[in-house]
Length: 218
Length: 242
Image (cartoon, rainbow over all chains, first blue to last red; front, side):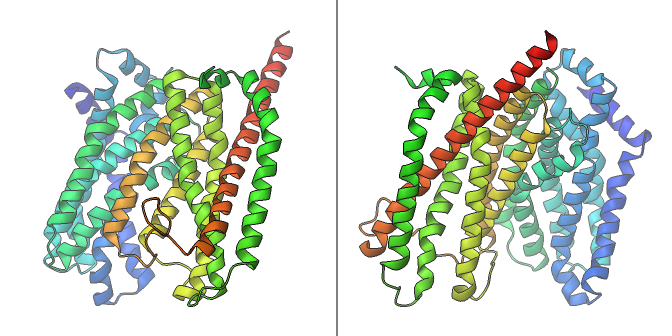
């Protein structure tokens, strides 16, 4: 599994630039928002946590179809399926690799973009914490969506239609943590809920993804 | 005699052919009676005036929108566990009907909300969860139509239905946390002495019965169509091979 993880990471970093793409997209979305809503500082600092969350979610969505599609095309997914690894392990590693290459950079870049959106000083920590807790769930849910659509020719659009409703709970709790943190309110309740959603999703959804992938590889 | 006999498509078609006209007529009768009774022979509410009458469409449609998803969930489970094709096709047949009911509930709610709340739409928990439910229906139908192989499509959509149910319930409680509601609480429940005044309650019951029957009739009809379409495709394929 570690070998698979390292392989996926190496592929993501070296070949084809899937690595920086999500990050650049995140940057552009957050830069575009002030053009859309106007440069007024008060308004920007009020919507900054939500914008950062939406941006992270979209950046995550953008790179989802790369999780499995490339391996599907060149046949390495079939090889992985016949390998002694359980399918659940494979999809978990895929999700982890996706998180390390898109989720984690987003978490680290969020404070920088927070400066651009004049995020209140108290908000930086909680935006990072909420993204760090929430983005693994986004990756795992995304892997489920990618597994559902892996065999399809033009699965990209369908993938977003399937995955976005599944993102609702994570987004609500994550953005709530960031918003309350930025306004200096207590964040425990939404943070615990977000952690609960993440933990539950990470524990259970790989089984569904593996089942779906087995069906698609049949 | 068990329910699994109807897993045989021929048996299913034969039985539903007999039952379908009766159910359809009953559905039309119930809906006509309930709606006419509700619209013309009940008094106006003393605060809401005649707008209250949209209740006879809104409440049954909303109930059936949720129950249709529940029916799809059961049918998906039956397909996963026992692999009866009729079950998978019934789930597929129910999805557009459920989505339509969701739209009816949302649209009638908006029409009522404009004079009463002063807005077509509010990000109220109930409204939001219905919108999310509608998105789930869309995704489910899109996945069905995107996959060519019937069995693969049935497998994938039933797993999506299971996962989606969990997430739909999660979203339901997440939006409750996210925003306080404008929508009134449950106005119909089984464990209350009196839900709404009897004068509104009886036509509403007839309407609910009508919507249930309408749903059953549409699902039967659409499942039959699916079975026949699949059979004709199989016959064509056999012809081409011969």
